[in-house]
Image (tube, rainbow, N blue to C red; front, side):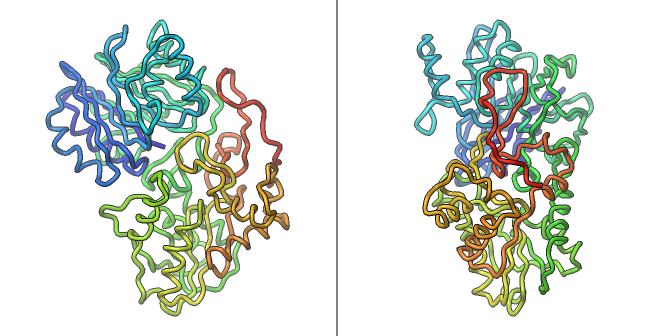
Length: 484
C-alpha cells in the first residue's frame, strides 16, 4: 500500500521526519525515501528489501537541513521524486495503486512528454502523477486533475518552498491525518506515528480533500467528498494496532472481530492463539468472549523479518514466513489449539510454516479462525494480491469446478452448500482440524462504519462507486448480492 509522512516545522525537521516515516515501515517493503527542503532540496532513497528503514537513513538524515520534509515507505516505486516545473521545483510522494499507468503514460508520450524515472521495468507511477499535476494551470488544479484521470487510488504529498500540499485519494481508500504540536504540523497515514512524537490529531482529511500547510498553518484548498469507501483491510490486517482510521481503533476492531468469531463457535479447546503480530488482537478478543486462555505457542522473531504478506515475490514471502515464527513446543504439546489469523490470502504460508509447526510440536487439534471472509478478488487499489489465481478461495473453486468461474456468487454466500464445500477444501489443504471464516456482516459490525463507507472489493467484488467524477475506473457493479 505504501505509507507517507510529512512535516512542516518551526525548527529543523529531519529527525521528526525520520521517525515519523519509520512508523510506516509495515506499509511497504521495497524502497524508503526522504526529502527535506531548506535552502535547497536534500533527498535520499534506499532499497529497504533487506534492511530496516532506520538503519539505511540514520546517517543520511543528519545531513538534511530544512523545516519542511516528506518521507515514504514504498511498496514499488522509488520515491519521493524531485521535479522541476513551471511552478518551481517540488518533491512528491504517493500511496496507492494506479491501474491505468501505461495508458496515461502513452497519452503523455504522444504529447511530447518524457519519463526519466523507470522502475520495475516500467514507468514510475509517482513521476506519472507529477507529470499530470504540471498539466494544470495551478498546482491545485493539477492535483484535482490527477483524480479526474486515474483509475485506482492515490494519496499525495507535494512539497514546495512554502509548504506541503496533502491530498487524500478521492475514493478514500487510503487515510491521511493531520497532527499538530506547538505550531508544528505532521501529515501521516498512520496515526501511531504521532504518539511518541507528541503530535495530537486535529483533522482527518475527507476523501478527495486537499489542504496546504505552510507559514499560515492549515488551509483547506479543496473540500472533500461525503462519499467514502476506506479499505476495510486496514483494520483487519494492514494497519498498525496503535493506529486508528476515521477515529476507529485498529486494536479494538480486532478484538471485536475475535469476539464475533467466538460467538459463532462452540469449540472445546485448551488455548487460543494468534498468528503474530496481526492475529494477536483477534485472538485476544476470542479469548475474552470464550473464556479460553490466551497463550503464545508461536512467537515472532522481529529483528530483520517483516511481513510475509507484503513482499512482492513468493520466494521472499516464503523465506520470511519460514524464519520469523518460532514455535514453543512446551506450550503446544498435547493441546487443542484455536489459531486466529487476520486472513487467509494464498494459504501456503499458513499451511507450510504455521500449521505444520503446530502439528510437529505435538498439537492434538488445530482450529483455524480467520478474522475476515475468504478473499475472492485481487486488490485494485494497492499492491497486495495482484493475481486472482493465487488466492486460496480461487484455488478451491477451480479444484471443485474443474475450471475458473466468472460468477462466484454462490461461493461468497456463507449459507450456500458451495461455500461450505470450498471452506472444507481449504481446510484439508491447510491440514487443519476445522476452519471457520468470519461472516462479512460481523466484520463490518466490528469495524463500526456503515457498509457503504467501506471498500469490501476483495471479499465481494463490489465495484459500485457513485461520485461526481470521471475517470474513477468503474462502470456499474458486479451482480453479486450482499449476503447478510
